[in-house]
Amino acid sequence: MAVPASGAVAFSTVNSVFGLGTAMSSYVGRTYYYYSGGVWTGTFPGSNFPMSLFYGKSNHDEWNCACDCNCNCGK
Image 1 (cartoon, rainbow, N blue to C red):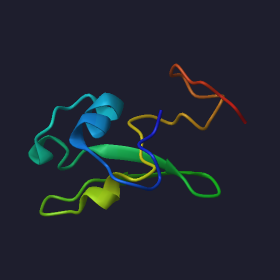
Image 2: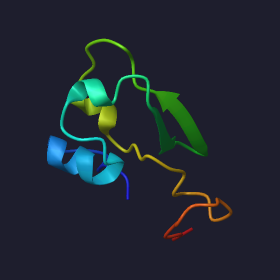
Image 3: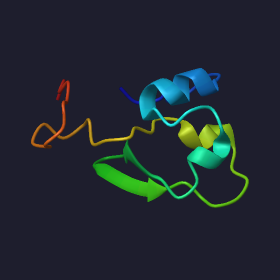
């Protein structure tokens, strides 16, 4: 499950997806995955970043049915 792509984002939601706690510093330098016409990755920056950066992000490639994680593939 990815963080919702819009609306208010609470750290409790982010933590339920990433499992890294509720301190912003826990996310610095961590890899995230997102879908935009294909699956892409990025890294959370090392300084101040907005909560909106979590929109649509996940801690694993949940969009690829061939991945080696526990996916719920709807595609």
